[in-house]
Structures are given as structure tokens and as C-alpha cells.
Image (cartoon, rainbow, N blue to C red; front, top):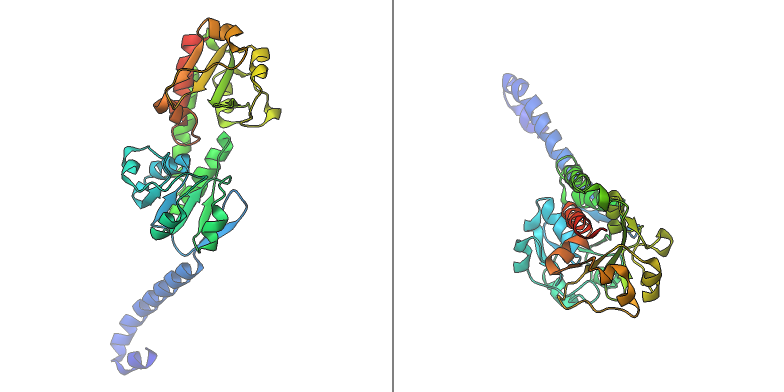
Length: 305
């Protein structure tokens, strides 16, 4: 290149050499950036290196699917788990099993740049052994949700101010608005929230418990039992909640555990039985948490003694 420039007339070299340097610098910088890529550390503490933001994504956790879409990157999803059903666009994607029993062959066939799944999934090691990049994220608290949104924003190459920060402000403001909508009599109500049959409950330490606390409710499941403990039905009888909230995706009649018919909340029909649509919203830690807060606030306003 230098020899070619020296052969040109002196005036041309004087005009074009700075431009050539600038272009060379740009090309060099771009090459270094592409070579360096970036790193993402997931909830397992594992660092995953990417040369560029992934364009083909498989998500095996509904809350992660929803978060990717709310960060305006739904078009990058090429496959989801069987429970990912929102927004409507993801229902047209290939379903690849669940987080516990994913269809490994179908996932590999899609040639994803990354697979998003829960830390509790047993598929991560097998997928990594097959050469796929895996990022495991499983939010259980409000702080976790905020961190997951930031991690996904980094992974997707979405500027933080336009992506994760903006989305979290919308969620937080929505939860606050739901709190302010509650009548005074509903505050302080003692609440039992059943996530699924077992009974598995949402404890004080869970994102659901934190939302209830912001609504002014008192969770009958203490933090020392963990975010989502499996309880002895007798525990709920002794706790004597004022209001019961139950996620009910099956839409079957609520089956009472032994002794629950004696609960005042049951006798006085102070039970909110959330159907599939609402149950999906209230039990998923992600971008629809403000809507979840409104659903729970409505229940408290209707059922609190």
C-alpha cells in the first residue's frame, strides 16, 4: 500500500493519505472488536463467550421467552418450550418439549446460536456437550428479574437504557400503580398463594411474595421456608389465611386438601382461582409482573375481609 501511494503525484498523496489512515483504523478497530466479542455470565456463574449477539435463539423457559420479546427481539427466536405461549407470535414457533424434558435432537437441528433455559434444567450439560452455547437464567425475586433483563439485554446487544432499564421502570411503575389502587381495608390481609398442586406455595422470599408485600398483604409462608416450598396442607390450616390465591391452569374445580373445608376463607368464598391466562401471568417472573400485580390487587379488593 505504501509503495502504491509513493508512485502517485505528491499532491494526491497529501490529500488521500489521511483518509487512507482513517479507513485503515476503522477496519482495524472493527476487526479487533469482532475478534474480541463479548462475555455473558449466567446464573450458574459460567461465562459464555460470543463473537456477536446471537441471531438464532431457542428459549426453554416462558419468562425468558417473554423477556426476549419485550426487549423487541422476538424475531430472533427459532424455537420455544411447550409452555411459552405469549406473545401470540411465539405460538407459531417449533415447540421443543419442556425445560425438564426438552427434545435435544430438535434443538440441535435448529442450529441455535444460544439456548436459554432455567438453572434447574438437567439439559444444559448435554446441550453443551453437543457444542451448543447455553445461558441458564432463573429469576426468583424482583432483583433477579432485573438482573436477568440486564443479562438478556447484554446478550442481545440492546442498549441498557433503551432495553432492560426502560422495561424495568415500566414494570416497577405498574406494580406501584396497582398498590395505589387498593382500598385501605385490603391492606394487611393475610394471604396464601398456591403456585401449583402439592401444595407448592409462593413464599415471602419469592417474586410473588415480594409483589404481595408491595401490595400491603402479609404472606402466611415465612421467608425461612424458601421461595417456593412444598407445604404440608396442615400448615395452611394452622396459618388461617384471610384470602387464598390459587393458580389453576387446568381449569378443574379446586380440590381441597384435608382440613381445608374448615378454613374461614374457604367457607366465606374468599378464594381467587386464577384460570390459565391469569395463572400464566402471575406465576411468571418477567415483563408481565405489573399485570400480575393488578390481578392480585383485584383479588384483594374483592376478597379481603
